[in-house]
Image (cartoon, rainbow over all chains, first blue to last red; front, side, top):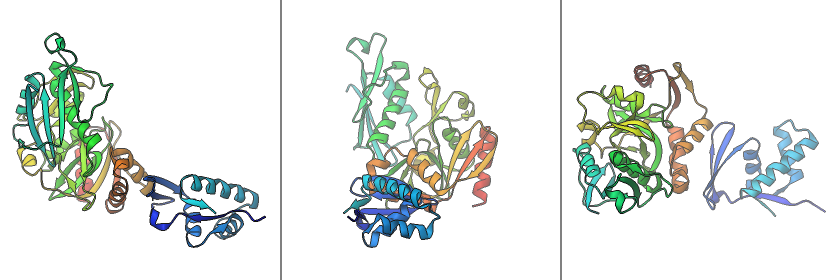
Length: 92
Length: 281
């Protein structure tokens, strides 16, 4: 059974301000500012165009970062859970 | 209330009422050169803690449109301080027209330097000393940043100096009474020079943010964008309340204006450092 797919919150709901290794993201519906560090902003960006499942996301992230397969998956699920809790990512 | 006064400081009008004459008389003297508006944005009330405490060991409770329910009353001799704290509180908790930053602001040629820091960082002392060297004083408590234009609007309240800083008060200044035994130690308020008050409707463009720290060996540090962003959010009393307007105003200030952290051992070297940074802009 395929895993869930994820998509970023509608771009109109977010104001993204890259700073340095951190990116400030203002979430309009909640009025909350989030400070994201790598690779959370990159995950958001990858999920902006079309929904992806975790395997496809991990594949794309692995092209940018040196990720150990098992640790990379753990990290990705942790970030996705955080982004989902913040309302920045939806699970489909 | 029996005694009252209305004052305007920059874009903010205050109405202060009191059970006693003395705090109002002290405000009237200290704010001698400020306009007396017909309209007030905020009300501060200095009330006796009970009917008898109006006369018997008189004790001032600071109330108003916004107040802290658990704040301790002050003796009547510190009534001016109670009024000043009440005025600060109205703005800190109620003001929404500008992004508020805990900062002193001085300007040259309508280009402003924001000195942002916690109490004790030396904001007020530096601002007073700079104002005696040709800088225009815009405020020692809050920078009011217009969310649309990004300009800093003056809020030139009397400068609140404490303890060791009292020695820098110029002898020709208009001051409030020397208050002792306050929760902040010894306190004295100094009215800004009349030019600063006369220009209190003239905004200035922020061109430099300094995070000063008093009592440290002289050192100047650059700041990473995230560090500046976080420190500005911490310095703001209404960033969250302003929502998107606050985020946009703060990120604009962060991206447009360079920021540095300045450690300094004493007022003279702090002033010299600010002027040195300024000359290199």
